[in-house]
Every structure is written in C-alpha cells, then in structure tokens.
Length: 298
Image (tube, rainbow, N blue to C red; front, side, top):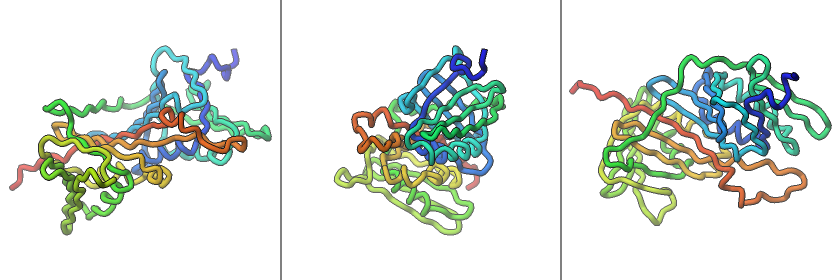
C-alpha cells in the first residue's frame, strides 16, 4: 500500500487561506523557542502552547475553515511540534495560495506533518515537519464562578492591546479591577512608578461590546504574561477588530478570548466575499493567565 494514499492519513485537509492560519498561530508566539501540542478531531484542529503554571494559549481551527476536511482517526491524535517551525513552514506557502489550496496531511511514514501545494503551473512546494510524542498533556483550565455566571467584559481588540502596551513598567505586575457601580474596568500598573487606565462602561460608546459584573473583583497578574495575550496580534486581526473577551474565575484565573476571521483568499474569478459564510469562517484564540500569588508581607 502506498504510504501517501489518502486512507493512510488520520487527517487530510485543504486550506484556502494559509495567511489566516499563520496570523492566528503568530498570536501564540510570546517567546522564540516554544513547543506546541496539536490535537486532531472530527471537529477541527486545536493547537496549544503553555508556560506551566503561568500561562496557556490555544487556537481553534474548526473544520468549517477548511475547503475539505477528511478525518479518519479512531482515537484523537496528539503530537508535539515546534511552534516557530510550524509558522515558518506555513509562511513559505502564503504567496502561492491565490488559486490553489494547501494540502495538510498527518501522519507521514515517519509520523511527520506533510504540507503540499501544486500551483496552476504544476510547480510543487512540499514540506515535512518533524513531530514528537508530547512530554506533558496541557492542563484543562475552566473558568468557574461562585455565583454561576463569571464576571466578564468584551472590548475592541485594538483598545485592549493599546492599554496593555501603555502599562509596561520594568518588573511590574498589573492589577485589574472590575466594578459594577459605577460600571468600569481599571488597569493599574505598579513598578518604578504607577499608571492607571480606566475603561468606563457606557452603552452609547463603542468601546465595550459586552459588560457583566454583579460584584467588584480585583486581581493581579505578571505583566509579561498579561502582555503576551495581545503582544503578537497581527495588524490584520486588529483591523478586523471583532473583539476580545476577558472572563474571571472565582480564584482569579483570567481567560482572554480573541475572535478572528479566516476569510478564504479570493481567486481571479472571484470579485467579492460571500458574507453568508462569515459564521463558518470565524475562529478564536484563548489565553489563560494565572493570578499572582498573594503575599503575606504587610
């Protein structure tokens, strides 16, 4: 049997917009060397990176984002891969997908991920990415609240990134306070000086997309981990500005969720994007940030 026959793969899929996948994965890259865990299922791909006990990020690529999605595995495959290598490899295909979809297959004969594209001139671009058995299984974080509905708010992604960029102080931590009366979100940075940024909630302004707070909360987070939730968001996602939602668990666990659009690349025969497919082309990126441990010092 041919090792590259379709039946030999747990997954074979075709992707129109490689740049959209690159942009989403770039959001997870908060340092140069990072290992990612890829999980395949009948519902799509999930790629997770984490700094144990501090920060976790994952991106979801639903099967509706792909032109074709053929999943044959009986047990969900999980494998490790270098995040930087995956992004760099995908980047080599971004300029060649105007009329042809990228084919992604797993596993190859040596358990590698295979990327292949044949363009209109019958030129073939081919890449193999070495995978490994994961050393650890990513922690399954869940936002829980004593009252049943977690305190949360959603704002424009560009506004959130600008606020966190402005709060940088050497060696600082960032306090986030959400208050119901008057309704507002306050970010406070403390280091070699103090800086406070307030987002007052006003239904008439377009800053907030949603606001849910039934009692005041306040938690502190390491700045470098909080900034990682927005630091690498590409300009294409900020321009789309679908929004970012922050939810707080009872123990201070923070979940930051960014909605992203992965629109298919238009071919020379297409002149517009069909908005009826918009819902199927929306994916999301999640970050979980653990709060700073409370100090017993006065």
